[in-house]
Structures are given as structure tokens and as C-alpha cells.
Length: 356
Image 1 (tube, one colour):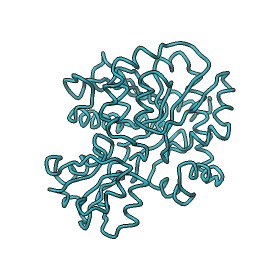
Image 2: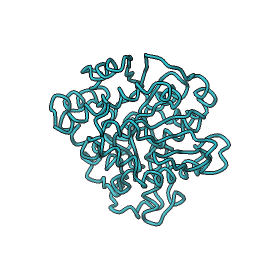
Image 3: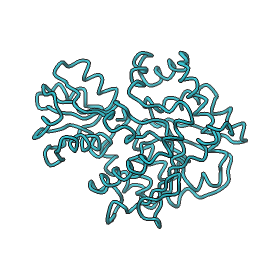
Image 4: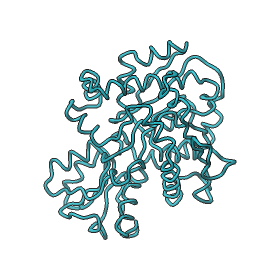
């Protein structure tokens, strides 16, 4: 999904790199200066705009704190650094929040669930037109990423499993070039690579995409739970800044959207096209409804089972319930004594009620 997966090898080793680091390096304390990491992706460009236009600073000033948003060029590395305690918060998907910081023992909270992929990720077949025809093919994708998860869900939809295909680990940066090879017959990738391949190759057919699994690939802002407990002002400022930008986007503010487009390496039309396949929660009430839905725990159960089956739920994980995940209503999936990922609605609810 993310155009910012720069190195698959980092995805494979990220958990081992941060085991034992993040849990102890970021000591809980009341402070007034914070750093949050972000990376380039359609659903996270609002953070860059909020920083550049002084919206983050305005909200931070309101609560008497300082917040610096730091762009990291490598997505997995940004999560790795967050897990090791360098950053107080970081943008990431729901699966990566589970398999990197949470699996490394870092207690994290999903402060804002800003959107979910609604077509930004897809399975392409060359000269074949149905998902069932993937059987027996090699599938190029970023292994153990959300593309891998999407492929698994697509296979499941037609009564197949990963045993019916061969996964070929391929860097996101190589996807477009790789498609031109005669050896490549199937591919799972995300925008903008997905749209570029479909636009420029008549042989490319989209046979399955993330709109078929709405709400399962979630883009979030995650904050260290202990930091959040001791510094609620950080959560209030970040949430306030985010939804101020969302209100501009909802109105179709051309200046804001153009700045986001240019910063992400495309034009206004290209950015709007990516937004069309991204279910953004422009109103806090929409984000609140999503956070409180019964679908969220069901989704995270699927994600946890996939992660365990692929050996990325943490070293020595005995089952898919190894890591506890808490939801807004207090329900917990997994080990109640090992809760390391929390989906909260406290501050989004305040935004919805105009209390920030």
C-alpha cells in the first residue's frame, strides 16, 4: 500500500532490531517538547501541510507545548526509530503497529485512525481477468507488507491459499520496471505504482483491491502509551491540528490539496485520484464511529492471525493471541497481561464534541 516501503529487508528485521529497546528507552515523563515521525503517503500528507502552514504550531501553542513533525524517508525505519524511543509518535498501518512496536514490547496507542485503503492497494494479473486465474503463478510483492496481507485475503475470496501461488519478494521501487519483464505475470502493489502500471499497460488487469476488504488496511497516528498518559496535551494538540486540516480537505481547499500533492511528488489531479481510493475520515464523528465499530476488533483478529502465521507477531509468540489489543469499549483481544496495542477514542471524541 505505502509508496514509502523503501527496503523489504528492513521490514523483515525491524522487529528484531527493536526488541528490548523501545520498552525501556522512552521513559514516561511530563515534558513540553515532542517529536512525531511521518512518511510520504496520500493519507499522511495532511501532517506535512499542517506543519508547513503553522497549524501544528498553533495547536501546540494553545496547550503550552512544542511539537516537531519529522519526515523520515524510509517508512519501516521511521517505525523502527519510534519503537526504539527516538520519537513520541509515528504514522503507520494497523498491521505494522502490531508487528513492530507492539511485537517488540512497546505499549502504543492508535491516537487517530485517519483513513483506510479503499482501492489504493490491488492485485494485478497480466493478460488474465479473474482472481481465480492467479493459481500457479508467481506473485511479485513486498513480502510481509500489507500487500502480502491483501493477496492472502484475495486468495481466500476465491477458495485458494498461499500454497497455490509463489510469492516473489520485490521492492516497491522496482514494481513498475518489473512489470515489463516477461517473467512477471502477477503483482500486488499500492498507489502510485498500482495506477501507473494499470494506466501504461494494456495487459494489466486489476482483479482484486482493498475496496473488497473495507476497513482492514488502516492508516493511523500511533503514540507511545506512557507518553500519552503523562502528556494528554500532546494528544489534544495533534488531534486538533489533524481535524483542522481535514475540514479544509473536506471543503476542497485548492491551496491545501495542491501543496499536499506537490509535496508527495504528484499534481493536484494525481493527488485527488489517490484520495478517491482512500476512505478519509474528514469529520471526527466519522473517525469516532469507525473506532467504536465492532468491525475493528474483527479486523485486528484477522491481522493478528495473518501475522502469527507468517512469523511476525514477535519472537516466541505461541499463538495469534500472544499480544493483547484493547478497544475503545474496553474489550481485549489476546493476552490481557500483554496488552501492547490500544485503539482509543478519547481525543477524537473530544474533537467531535468540540471540546479541544
